[in-house]
Amino acid sequence: MLKYEDQSILSEPKKRILVVEDDIQMSKFIQFKLDSMGYKVVGDAINCDQALERSQALDPDLILMDIMLDGHDDGIETAQKIIDRQHVPIIYLTAHEDEVLFDRAKITEPFGYLIKPFNDRDLRIVLETAFYRNAQDKQLKQALEDVRNIINSTIFIMITYDLEGHIIEFNKMAEKTFGLERKIAQKREVVSLLENKQDHTVLLDGDPLAVHQHEEISFRDEAGEPFRCLVILSPLQGSGDAIQGRLLVAQLI
Image (cartoon, rainbow, N blue to C red; front, side, top):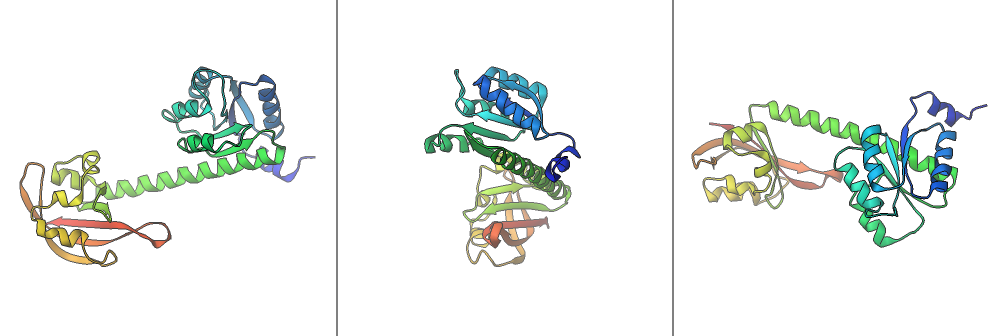
C-alpha cells in the first residue's frame, strides 16, 4: 500500500530529473532511488559535454549534478554553462564539505546540496524543497513581469533609483521622452538627467522617507533639449520595509 506522500507525488505528473554523475555505480543507485520515490529519470550524463547536450535535448525539471566531474569542466562550470542557456534548478552532489568549493558553487545559485552518502529522507527533502522554491520563483518572476508590463503601458515617466542615485528601472515612457534605452540608463545616475543641477537636492538630499508631490523639475534629453515635468517622489521599499531608494513619477508640463 502506498504511503500518503507517495500518493501525493503519483497524483501529479512525474517530475523529470537528469542525473549527471561520473561514478556509474553511484549514478545507477541514484536513479534507482529516484524511480522508487516516484520521479522520472529522463537521462544521465558522465561529463560536461553529455550534460550540456542532454539538458537541452531533454529539458528536465531538475538536474542532480556531481560537483566533481572528471574532465575539462567540473560540475560547477558545467552547471554555469547550462543555466546560461536554460532555466533549470540544479542540486549539487558532493562527497566533500569544502567551503572553497561551496563558495564557487554559490555563483550558480544552486537549489540545494546533497552530501554523499545520503539517505532517502535527505534526497526527498532536498528535491521537494527545490521544486517548491522553483515554483515560487516562477510565480515571482511572472508577477514582476506583469508589473513591468503595467508600468511600461503608462503615459507617465517612471524611474526608480537607489539611495546613491543609481538608476534601477526606466520605463518605456522614460525611454521615449529622454531618447535613452533602459539598459544604458541603468548605467547612469538619476542626476545626469537633470537640466539644472540645483534640482539635485530634490532628488537625493533630505529624508528618504519623505514624499514630494508636484515638484517642478527641469530635465534634459539625450539630444540636449530641456523639458519640464511635474514630479512625485516617494520611498522605494524593499524587504523588511527597508528603504532601498526612490520612485520618481513624472508628467510633462
